[in-house]
Image (cartoon, rainbow, N blue to C red; front, side):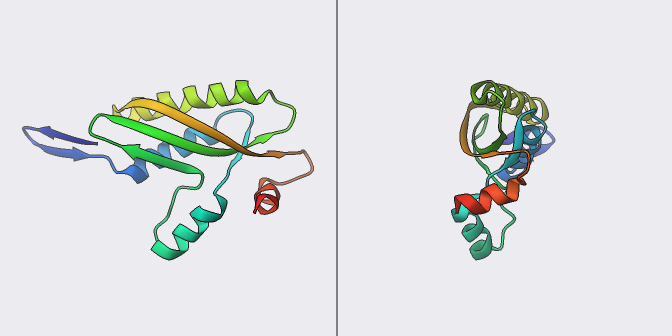
Length: 126
């Protein structure tokens, strides 16, 4: 996001929006973890850049689109968790940045059982 004012320009980086979205996602009940996937780990190693795990954003001048890859807790209705997740992320990004969030896409990549840790699910998916 770039905003030109009489006093200067305000820019909000994609990484900032991704961090806000990731934190809002992890605060949503029923979300066990974010899923980074193989390609994200490779991109992190190649670029040396700290990629926000499980979050991809496209930020324009006034709008943002967000893609989330998540792991959910077993036994909780997935559609309800995902709807709440979309709402939480949309509100957090809009409130903190002023951007209009046009879409929040969610891909559920795993389910965590009580005896498993989220990292075990990620390793099983690879």
